[in-house]
Length: 150
Ligand SMILES: [Ca+2]
Ligand SMILES: [Ca+2]
Ligand SMILES: [Ca+2]
Image (cartoon, rainbow, N blue to C red; front, side, top):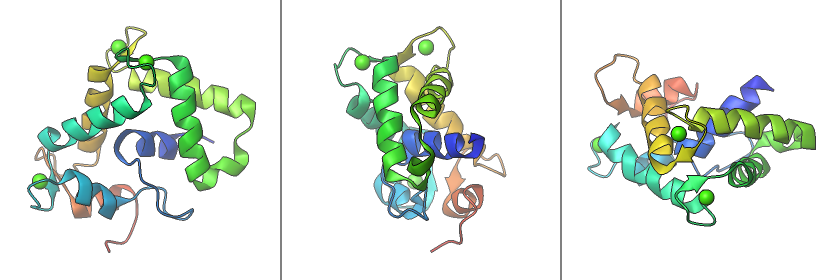
């Protein structure tokens, strides 16, 4: 369940597109969308507009905050698009929603703002930056998600 949650939130933050049940993270799709200068590396400056657009998609009432309900709907959408949906009981959905809400609330003030969401997206990207040079390469992201580069 923990693994499923991590996969779901990864998808939620930086990979809205999930191609198949086997692929929970669409690395080529992410690069196609986010690597705007096409140099094979994703920088925080590149992930920022993508995370912002992702936030706007889930901020259903447009008030600049993700409410618990909005996070729940987002987690549900991602669960339905991934292999984990089979295990998604109402109790698990509530737990996943609570975890995701805390996770997205980057400054931990109890509200998920657009900036929180963007900062979480950036920090998540940098987790995959194994050699800590401030950019994440295609190979690093594949390694992070344990996929063979395509
Ligand atoms: Ca780039
Ligand atoms: Ca909202
Ligand atoms: Ca916050």
